[in-house]
Image (cartoon, rainbow, N blue to C red; front, side):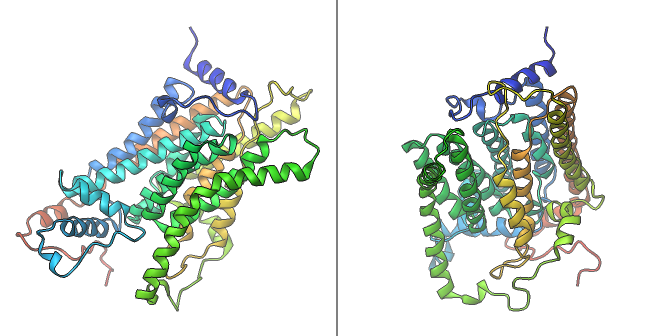
Length: 450
């Protein structure tokens, strides 16, 4: 009887040996969640499940701005009620960006308590992102077990700060990249329509995520379309033209979302130009060496014990080890691999584009703070996609170690959320004891806060 490790190795080899230039097999429901083996699938979704379960282990979520977004969702719910008193003075504006989270939670809160609706949407965003990464790796013909290396940053800097509308938009953007990758191999009307819808929904969810989607989709579509052309084609101009033509066709549906963002910006800027300005801090950013040395702090920075940063660096170390093992394997090989057994080359454009964006983007942009740290999660995703497939006797241990690392990172996130729930139980009880019609405007939790 074959072991789970052997099954994973054989399945991974079969995936890696898929012929270049041909689209992936017809999509199945299992493609949304299944990895190369049952054990890897269980470990991956066990890790994701622990992160998600952490949001149900505490009444107050450990996300800074989350109560603000929950409050806006409650306002949206009341403004959707025709009998609400607020209707006499205010109306709900649907022509905006960054609003999808509030409307989804507002709609759900008509059926369940708004606290449950909010944490359910946050949890659903993480589950959707995790499934999208598996689907993206499969669409790019990369080993799906590499998705486990993203788990340490699933609870990201953006989520820790409570940017839940951006977290929801990130899930939508990654799913849009799945259709970009498939469309770059074989465009179809259904695929292009899905991209147009996802692009518009992403624009409604968060404008920064839409901007990231445009950059990521452009580089990904060009690289995948270029590699799909026959490598033996000596007519470089015709190959370049064909690549750009296919990439243009694939990216064209995203114009709808871009136009929506521009229209909203034009309308809101006329109302209040000061919202898009920060005269004192506009364009400021730490030096490049700090962005590099303190990358893990900018990417997560969730816990005072820095355990989240440890797991992130360990995940990046595994990616670096895979690169080293692959380089050593090629150097030690006596003969070049035949085309029938050669691995599809890793997709590197997303990693390089997000690395440049991370280092080039300031901390404050167009009056909005904490911008470039949100791109760290995309940089890690690019590294996961660009990771070469390790071979040799150490490859299976690398896969198993990565899966165990992801599970430990998930358990660590759950433990810290549970401890946060224990630490804030008195504050939660105080809020529960407020009489009807009364509300708290702030909760001070640091002794040095003025």
